[in-house]
Length: 334
Image 1 (cartoon, helix red, strand yellow):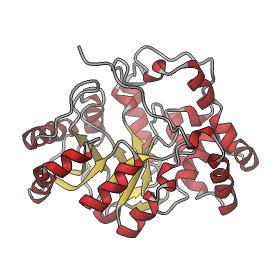
Image 2 (image 1 turned 60 degrees about the vertical axis):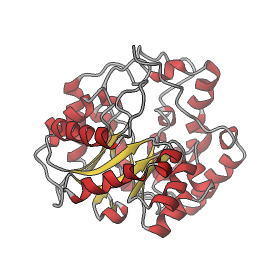
Image 3 (image 1 turned 45 degrees about the vertical axis):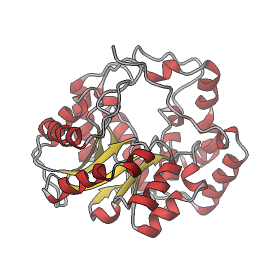
Image 4 (image 1 turned 30 degrees about the horizontal axis):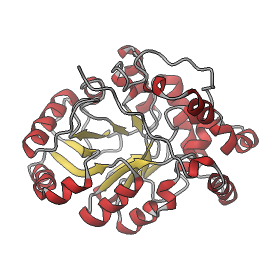
């Protein structure tokens, strides 16, 4: 596993991180279906054995279930050593389908709950979960609360997980977070198109590239006929959209994968890591086998300049360039 520095936080993290949305388990319309905690824990431990040290989570993932699993696996590990685990969690969107809450008092309570579930006294990175830019502009005490939590030693650094790459770029310019999180993958290259990654590199801001496998569609394992389980948010996608995305990985990188003898998922992850502005990328992983495949992508290093340019050219002429994917709205909580 190769490592990179997480921007101004100074933390050394694995290039391949672990996105824990999926292991949160069943949440109607906002998950990947039911999960088994034993399998999830095995995947987490396998990831650490493979050199994965960065784990991204949120209080809303399985209504705290993902954080509890991380606490059970890694709660006793502290940051700072070569075998350390760096955990990034989120606050401000406590339930999928429910209202956001960025009130300072809620952020403090949310963090306390996360720390209990994570079995830690401090979390390395606390991110606001899709905060509206106008709210941050109008309510400076929100970011002031994050600064207070940093001074109190409850968090080491704070960041912003934004809805779009454009918002992430604006956030860097206006609020100087240590870290931003945004979508970036073969079929959603807005982070490159608008200069987010170059801006982040020039300012020392870490970028966590989320959805590197585009909700599993860039793994090459899904087809137009795939039946998604109850609770899986992809059940809300149209058949036409599923068919388009199911063939995206082969369209973008099928020849490169065949030539290099690597999986489509590995090529997709290598694409994300081919820009130095990316600090880490966080594929969702549900099983030890998925961990093994994804972690191995780091061993191959970035794509060649020619392969990277080929993918960029294909993207520019594709329908994805004008219509990047977004997750359908989660049904309201009862």
